[in-house]
Length: 450
Length: 122
Image 1: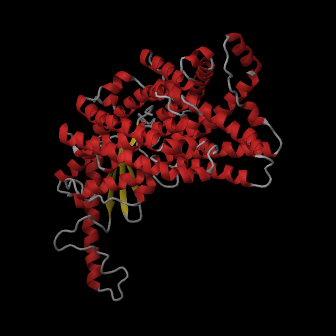
Image 2: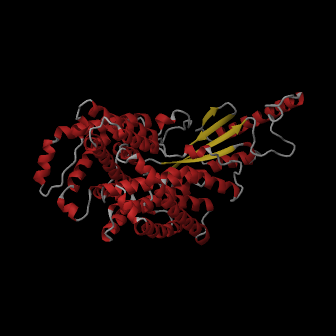
C-alpha cells in the first residue's frame, strides 16, 4: 500500500500506532482534512486566501492571453507552489525523510504542471479532445521513455500519495447522502463486474494457460477488484511468489495506461453522457490514478461518478476479498502453509485508510451545508467547495504527470505472453460488461448523479 | 522477470508463539488449556507447562539462530506471547526451506507475507 524507498535500508518492524504517521494512506487523510478545515477556517474568519491562491488557467486561443494571465497571477502561482511544497514536505519527511531531494524534484514537477496546464487550456488542444490530464500523461510518458529520470526527480513522483490526497479532497464535493445512496448501487454494479472478470481471468489462467492458482488469483484480483492494491493484497493473502505479484502489477499498469486513452475515445465516439461515462470508467479501469485521468478527460460529473464507482463501489471492499481468497487458499488449495489461518482483523488492516478521509471530508461539508449559519448554498460553493476542487485538480495534475514519468512501457511489457493473455481475457469481459451495466442498463440513473 | 524490474517489495513476517502451535501432534495439547480459567489447577498441568515452554522456547531460539545465520537483515520484535521476525530482503520460501530442512515443521511457526509497491509504481 505504501511508498517504498528503502532500496538499501534495513528492515524495520511494522505495524502499531506508528502506521498513523508512517503510511501514505494516513498522510493523505491528515493533509486532505487539514486543507478542508483550513479553507473553512479562512472563510469563516473573513479571509479569501484559499480562493486567492488557486489558479485556474482559462481557455485561450492566442498565447498572449495565456502569458498575460500568467504574469498577472505570478504571486498567486508562487504562493500556490509554496503551499503545496510545505504541505507535501511534512508528509515526505515522515514517509521517506528525503525532503531536500523532494524540494528540487517537486519544483520541477510543479513547473511542468503549470506548463502542461497552460498547454492543455489552449483551444486548439481542446478541439482535438486533448484535455490536460491526457496531455500530462503523454508528456510524462515521452520524458520517461526517452530520457533517464534523475533520482532527485523520482523522489517527487509520489503518484499514490497525490491521488489519495485528491480523492480525500474529492469527498468535500460529494454530499454524504449522495455517497450513501449512489454507493450501494455502485457496489452492486461493481461486484457483478468484478466477479465476472475475476472468474474469467482465474479460469483462463488456470485452465487454459496452466498458471499456478495463486498467480492466477493475483492476476485476477488486479484485473477485477482494484488494480495494483488488489494484486499486492491478494498476493500476500494467498502467499503468491514475488515474481508473480510483480508481473500482475506490471500488467495492471500496462492495461491501465492503455485504457486511459481507449475509454475517453470510446466515450466520445459513442456520445455517452458524462455520468454513465464516469461509472463505466469506474468499473472498467484497473487503478485509481489512471481511472481518474480518464474521467478527468471527460468532465467534473464523470469524476464524481467514477469516484463513487471506484472508491466506494470497489476499493473499500478489498479487505473482504482478501479474507475470502485467504480462506479459499488455506481450505481449498494445497495444504502448503496451512498453519496460517485467515484473520478477520486483516479486513481492517487492508482497508484503504484514505477512504476514511474521503468520507470525513464529505461529512464535514454536508454538515456545514445543513447548518443554518450558511447564508446560501452558493456561498458554500464559491468560498469552500470551489477552492477545494481547484486544489484537488492540481493534485490530479501532479498525479497524471507522475504516472507518465514513472511508467517505462518497455519494462512493463516484459511479462510473458501467458499472463498477458489471461489478463486480456478479463479485459475483454470487463469492458463490454461495464458498458452494458453503466451505460445501457443503469445509464439513466448515473445521468442523475451530479 | 528480472529482479531489477520487479515492481513490488515482499515483507515476510514469521511469528513464533510461545504457547501456541497451529497443529498439535499426537499426545501434545495446548499447555494453558488446563491452567487458564480452570478452577482447580493441578500441579501436573503446571509441570506440563514448564516442560512445554522449556522445549518450545529452545526450539524458537534455534529457529531464530538459523534464520539470522542465513540472512542478516531481520527486524526482531518481542511481544507478550510471541517473537516476530520480519524482513523485506529475503524470500519467504527460503526461510521456510531452511526451517523445514532442520526439522521444524509448519506447525511451529506462522508465516505471513505482505507486498507493497516498489518505488514509483502507481
